[in-house]
Amino acid sequence: MMLRPASPDPITWTAEEHLAHLFLFHAARHLEATLNDAAKDNLSHRDFLIRLMDIERVARYESRVKRLIKSAKFPVIKTFDTFEWSHPTAIPKQFILKTAQTMDCIEKHEHLIFVGPGGVGKTHLAIAFGVAACQRGIRTLYTTAADMINTLVAAQADHSVGRVLRRYTAPSLIVIDELGYMPLDKHGRDFFFQVVSKRANTGSMILTTNKAFKDWGEVFQDNTVASAIAERLVENGELIKIEGSSYRVKKRQQKSLGLDALGPQKEKKV
Image (cartoon, rainbow, N blue to C red):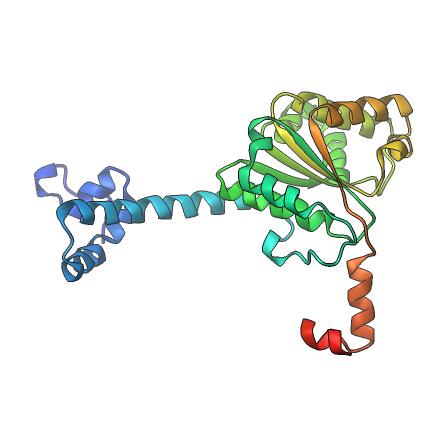
């Protein structure tokens, strides 16, 4: 089926071609099948039109979500449904789920800082939040702290720092993962400060870190800069503390004991 009119005379266009001319491509593709369904279900003209337009709306939504998720550059796709909430010994589950459901923090340019030791699920939750944001039509970007800093430092060589900075400041939401695993030098902390400052009133951030605020002096190797960044985040953000042992270590231990092939219920009986 041709989706663009072949004839310059609209009088000769088919219904599909009229729809395509109006950029209703999904409706055009599904017109014949929808007409058949409408006849079977004895739909009125109004209900038929509603069903056809609903097909267009849903398809456009799904296409937009796919584009947003692809452009967000998540390393993997994670959701809240697949998170093992019982593993952490302490986690504000209801607050996390409510915040993800409403997405009010995005509209208010508020930040979420996930703090906890390695392996408790900070990255999983941060990505899940980013995916949920994409599903709400919110432009999102994922990066690790190291990748962001390395990209900005490299941009100095070809004088493209301004353009690269916009990559990290333009999206409504940016997820910055793994802050604190490597100390930042002067260039690194200066760039990180710029990103945080520029996003203060223009967008939201989700950060994951294994360092408490009191230890950020070690991360940025400058107590003044560390305090300035922490203050900007806390001023308009929420600290989400997660406690527990490493889930990755747990899975390795289960595998070494041959327990990884057992289902959750069987494992409890062993």
